[in-house]
Length: 99
View 1 (spheres, rainbow, N blue to C red):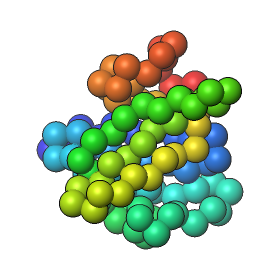
View 2 (view 1 turned 45 degrees about the horizontal axis):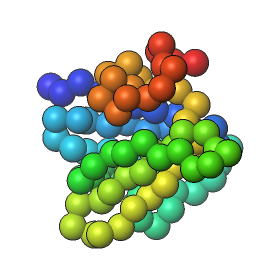
View 3 (view 1 turned 90 degrees about the horizontal axis):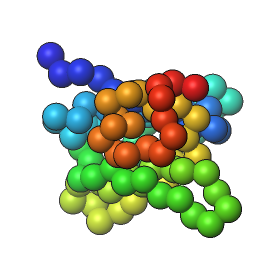
């Protein structure tokens, strides 16, 4: 069984990630915000091509999800917490574990 990594965003979304199979799903949102159409329904596993840290000027760090075969990106809200394995892989700055 593969290890599950994950992250949460400042807007309340929680994601689970299987790095070795390149699968990701949004588990839900604490504030009730719906997923974007590119993400699919909450709980649905989707293949991704890459996960990339993005920091726009004056903004906190977010994750861009590059979807397999779709040529599309999803930019998350700024990160709130990141699992240690995912933080190491992505090089999340100033991260010592979940906040």
